Image (cartoon, rainbow, N blue to C red):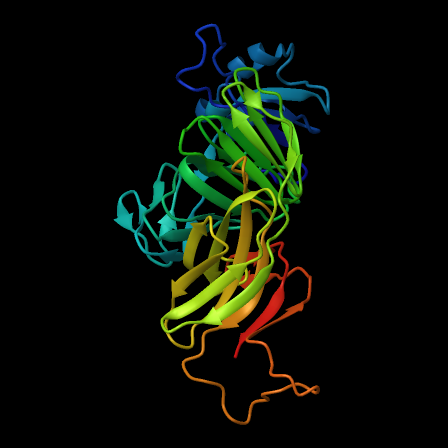
Length: 392
């Protein structure tokens, strides 16, 4: 097979239409790959090596190519997605908690996730799946995705990944794609979110009438509605999609402040500073700063929440504020927290230089990106507000 370095292409994103869309709405156009002709390319050779059936005549008619053996270098060929030869790509479960299933079977570390599978989480459960390039998609509790596409396109050697969020929420961390022949999309019944390297969240609200896209890093293109025009959603912004289309992006709420982390008889109590414009707060605890290994999560309308934890549990805390619109804000990550099994030793300092007793909670703000390496799966680069916390 000839080398594919430098081939240029992309798939045109097409938004899925609701079953309740107006009868006058036009059906979604067939997905097409845009391929840039290179020196020595011929339609017959491309069809023989990279197309299902090896027949170039449909491509010739579609693109009005006069001579299939001579095409202008740099010209664009539209190739229907259904004609592309592909090979499967496998994702692997790198973390799970509780009832997390793949096609109805309980997940395990290392479980393979392939195209066509359905991944689902129950109450108080989560799962994280890593792609071959280190990109990840994670589901919190009560969420479900269908893996529509997880493949490599032979014509371009690019990864084609499409996850359909059917219910709940998802969080994706996508390694920047240096290869133009790769993509990563999360679709809902209302929208398509396409990226080339970023961290973002997609959710479907309980009504099923709104899809929410929230961008933590990079830029996400969102398309929705019967005649979708892609809306660019930049870092720190979110957008709401409805059957009519995607609304203009709005700024996400900033990270909530963690003002108290208190040991209790059974675990830990977390207190968040109330924020104007927030209707609720999401609190998550994880054993890693990338939050692939979540141990507890909850959403509360109150400013405090308690979790039961085993003695000597070490954890990171991630806080987000949920706006009245339903959009979830930017995350604040505090790390590491430790729930101690016993009081501090007598040798530990009990007062500072002024003689005052130390506070039960200390926070040293150290904003910086915190990469974490997943063995065999590349590097995940979360965007976070990092800090140290300690319980006394």
